[in-house]
Amino acid sequence: MRQGAVRALRRGVAAAVVVALVLAPWTVDDYTVALLARTLALGLVAVSVALLTGVAGLPTLGQTAPYAAGAYASAVVGSHLSDVGLAHLGIAAAAGAALAAVTVPLVVSARGVVLLMITLAVGELAVTVVGRWRSVTGGTDGLAGVPAIRPLWGLPVLATDRARYLYTLVVVAVLVGVVLLVLRTRVGLLLRAGRDDEARLRASGHRVPVHVAGVHVAAGAVAGAAGSLLVVAQQFVSPADFGFDTSALLLLGVVIGGTASVGGALVGAALVVAARDWLFGVLPGQAPLVLGLAFVAAVYLLPDGGRRPPVRGRLLPAVPARRPVPDRPTPTGVRA
Amino acid sequence: MTPLLSAHGITVRYGSLAALDGVDLRIEAGQRHALIGPNGAGKTTLLDVLAGSTRAGSGRVLLAGRDVTRLGPAARSRRGVGRIHQRPAVWSTLTVRENVLVAALPRAVRPGRWHPSARRRAAGRTADALLARVGLGEIAALPAGQLAHGQRRQVEIAMGLAGRPRLLLLDEPAAGLSAVEVGWLGEFLRTLPRAVAVLLVEHRLDLVYALCDTVTVLRDGRTLATGTPAQIRASGPVREAYAEGVA
Image (cartoon, rainbow over all chains, first blue to last red; front, top):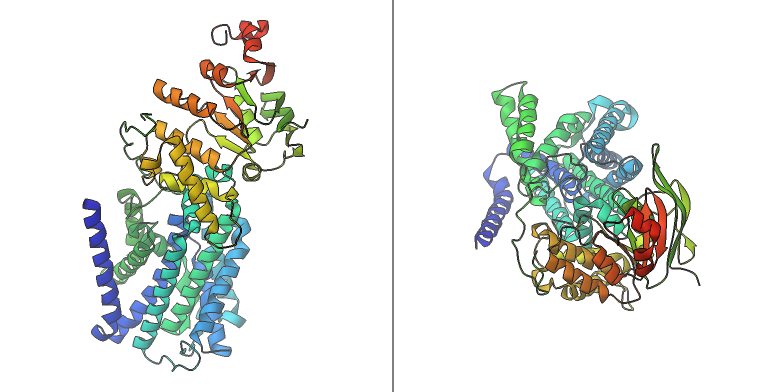
């Protein structure tokens, strides 16, 4: 009964959020609309972080790398080749997936804090590369003036913040829907099983390295697509969009939202971005410190986030064991 | 005749300590073989080596005549080596049915046609049948993390069988079970089809003698004796070494 009420409440809140997001362009100013579009892009990266950290139990601070790869690929394509959003998305997702695939040998056998450090290094290396590869990325100045896109061939160019926001909203909704659908298949089962007990999964005959590589590449594609949305939203990209603070914000958002929850990742990322922007005004220069403290507090005070499961390698404190089903007779007559 | 599994000269060292020192083992198809010995004898280490989760320093493992020494646990499982762990290993956030279904996936038989969900459906049917067999059908939708020890053991046995093993490695399956549960376990193992050979590591010698036709005794990483339960009971060196337990 209580579970049913919680589920109904959760669905009600989700429906209200969706309605608010759809109506937002007609109820808030253009600046806020543009900010919401960027937040949605960041929320999609958070989904990729949740996919790795929460669903698969592979904590990461490196999703800014495929995010950056997707953003720059989209910006370069937009500036020189095509103004079609679908092409941008495809190329950005491919760039994110390709970068993730390149890093697979580094991450496939690492777990826990070691994995976190490797992914942090990958993220920082990506920022360094885009900062120095001036001929392609514009270096630390970034790429400005990326032309507005048209969603598909034959459709008008998205000339307003409202149009770009709605495009971003639709793409995020579709991609999150795809992620949720895939997680309902055996892929989701295998990822959760690997998170719970990887050795048992091996002992059952599953090729765990293939699963780990697959989820890294898939999460890279999602983050790459998010990079494309970032470029659509702000028509500009620079290394500042992919620094460590972004990685930390993403992980904080995912922890707050409940690492295993895709929707929670979106909400958590939005909350963290909103808090950061508010803190910039209230405590100038201190926002990273406050967010760092918030991260520590979230890990220790909200161990369940929304519904946080254990992480491979015990990065975070273990979830307290639930009480076993008490002395329940089974049909064989065996009592546990 | 080629044995189902044979291990030759298995040696595992942890620093200067030899956990296993040149152990040989031979298991025929359908055989019920027990591995007994005091704590620290190397029984679990030998199971780990046979399952592929521990790499032997030297020696060879053959499965149906094929050398699998260099294969990991996943590859050996797909070749028909199932494993039940000393501490029941289940996926706690998955339901009971999902646990068995995931264990069944690698060797699920797809009936005739290719379809993305055909394997999952086949694994689901296997899971339902096995859960009914171990008596957990009514709690199939419960998260495995909510189960008590005995029920987890039942789930893991179903998981072990879901991979359609030719050889089932059981590491102290009776540990932590009540007398009633041990009775159920013994009866269940007794009714396993002869297509499944069993290598049982167990301290409960009543269970070992009731189930197994061959017993190997390990001590300090070496094979002390191999024979029928009656021979082991009568063996002088074994009686000397395990006067309290084996006789």
